[in-house]
Amino acid sequence: MAKDADALAVRDNEAVLTAASAKATSAPPLTGIAALIDKLMRTRPMRVFQHYNADGGPLMAAGMSYNAVFATFAALWVTFSVAGFIISGNELLKQGLLNGINSAVPGLVSKDGVIDPNDLLSASTLSWAGAIALVGLLLTALGFLASMRDAIRRIFALPGDTTFFLLQKARDLGLALGFGVLILVSAGLSFISNATLGAILNILGIDEKSIFAAVLLKIASYLLVFLVDLVTVAGAYRILSAVEIPLRRLLVGAAIGAAGIGILKAAFGLGLIGGVGNNPLLTGFAVIFGLLIFFNFFCQVLLVAASWIAVGMADAGIDARALGPMQVELDDAVRLEEARRLVADANHRKAEEEYRAARGIRKWRLRRRIAQDARKEARRRQAVPTTDEFAAAEGTQESGS
Image (tube, rainbow, N blue to C red; front, side):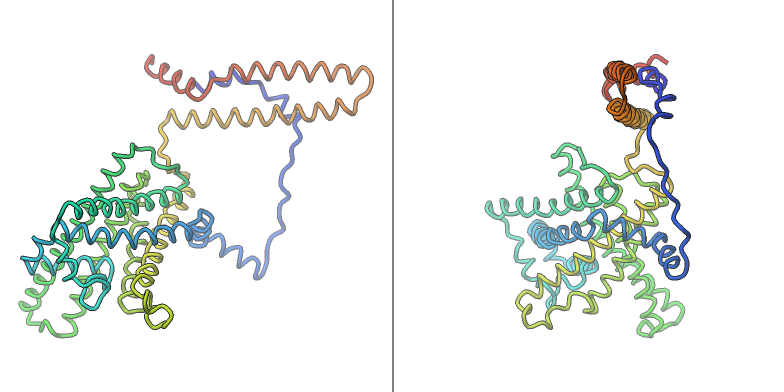
């Protein structure tokens, strides 16, 4: 089909020679501090942050963090309203779920934290009014996933997801449930790993209360949280946002995001981030402000890691749109036609300038030439197929072969 498009387009050999053109003047080589700064700006981390800022990353992270606060409370209320009567009768399951939630957001649910677990467990009674409220809260939680999907796709310079609305919500609901199951699984794995590690230490004759044992248990818990965050971030990029990312680049980017989120959780748990309670002007809003700060950093880490993947894919010439061979050929044909139109328009402007400056018979000849070229270009443009016609013809050609 590319050959057919060539046949329908004008021949540009002579036109290219007559079109005015210029090449950029090469800049003088940089030296000293300027050269050092230029080298620094060309490094991948700097280009990642430039890409993140150019695509509006900080603004999108601010909007996501605003949605995340309400989505968190909504998700907790929905979870404990539906499963609270099961959890309340099983102390081990309740503690495991609370530990899993606090591993995702440190200090969120505890007697000294943001939410008292007893208040959540009391929400297990359902009524018609409560069921209607749960639907609204569930949509609020799903809205955060929708905003996350749009932000990540913008980082990859992709248009909005065109999947049918109800299918999107069903997919988001499945991911939300999957994340909840992941929290429960991580809590169970944490209990099993701690018990297994304790048994191994007893076999080796090492006291479980020793510093060595405490360090091992801490490392095991951090590794488990890292793996959970890794799966979560990778799922946000590949499944939620539906971005076609090579597996190796996906794992590297998700690992960077998971490491950043782990550091963020540790800093938040130590009070290094979100400690607005010391400010007397914000004491009444300390809970909301603390969560906003945490989720703002969380969303920024998520988008910066996505920018790392996007920049790496761009450097490698990988198109995030995952175009098939026919779509690639169609895009090439569209760019070819745009280039031909630019050349034709440049030649037309140049001919008009010559016409205005000409005198006598030369002016008459130029006028005829401009009219002939305009008619020829109009016929050529009329004969060039549209994108739909191109795709249909390409499909017919493939089926015939």
